[in-house]
Amino acid sequence: MVCQMKKWNFSAGPSVLPMEVKQRIQVDLEENMSLGTSLMELPHRGGQFQSVLEQAVHDLRALLNLPNDWHILWLQGGARAQNTFIPLNFIGLKSHHCADYIVSGHWSETSFSEAKRLGFDVSAYPALGVHSSHLSTNPDLLACDVRDHVSYVHLCWNETVNGMEYASQPRLSDTSIPLVVDVSSNFLSRPIDFSTPACFYASAQKNAGIAGLTIVLVHESLLGEPLASCPEMFNYSEIARVGKPLNTLPTFPLYVSSLVFQWVLSQGGLSVMEDRAKQKSNRLYQFIDTSDMYVTHVSPTSRSRMNVVFFLKDPALTQTFLEKAAQVGLLYLRGHSAVGGIRVSMYNAMPMEAVDDLIAFMQHFEEGYLCQA
Ligand code: PMP
Image 1 (cartoon, rainbow, N blue to C red):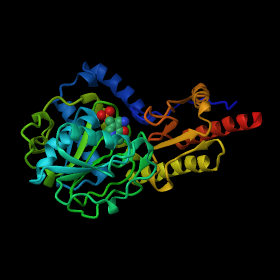
Image 2: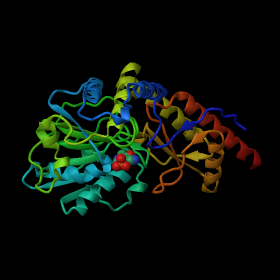
Image 3: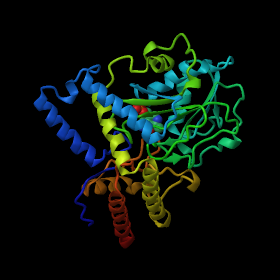
Image 4: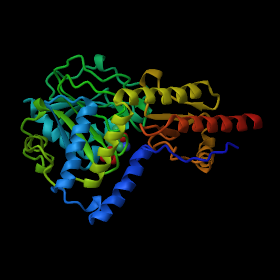
């Protein structure tokens, strides 16, 4: 049996944090205790927390190389709440009040369904004939025939559930249509080009911190008048105009994110994260592609670097695989219930060593069954 000593958290989110960040949290908590107020007790408009917030803004801007005409909004409710607030904020950008949604998997279908449920004039591309869980190739955006009068086009850059990611930054053939992009599970794993007006949004609990904080990046040209039904607390234009959060931020998650930003900077920034992500995922995909026991259905051009989804060719072995993996410290590998199989989430904080340990286990598991056959 593989003798696995370390434990690795392959969860899709909330997920692994850098060790340096966890250690720093411990030290900071101790220090603050001696000052009489721990970090969790600081008033959100007080000087100490304000400097954490200012540093977070400074570091995130530096990491992303974010132009001055882009705003960072710190929100709550996760990416799913933005599925409601995105149409309320952006559908009125053009008089036709309509939007198109590229459906490339579970989360983009969820976004589309919410906009539809709210009664907006939205279309899905490709048409929702096939359940998104069974897609294996991303829709080709340049061939995508979106309506030219839409206020925006929504898509999800990395489909966490399906293990599918657009290999390069998604672009439409008509670049004047704003893209609204869910980057929840690949945020901070690669540079983003901010040269065309758009909006990117992410829950923090994968690559950018812990659950509780949602980050929205938006170009100022998208900040018009939201629909009257948009709650004030989620009026993106108003939050950007005021220039600070309207209510009490989740202060502790924001502080953790600020440490994550510093960690990414200290590692060399987003290009370094991108290289590492490629190396880790390539190594795992190469192993899967050459094995007789495992298979991925995602076509090579659509494979996610963050979430590798694969199956045991004999599905009856999946449960044993998961149990044995957990016994040797390879944790949270079960695929999402919409898809099944195995999902390996390898966010920025996951070292190559973890991927090597996983591959060693998979190899050993395969050999054990081949011997029996
Ligand atoms: N979009 C993507 C790409 C996700 O991975 C997730 C969460 N796994 C969500 C949206 C929903 O995020 P939340 O639960 O924070 O609302």
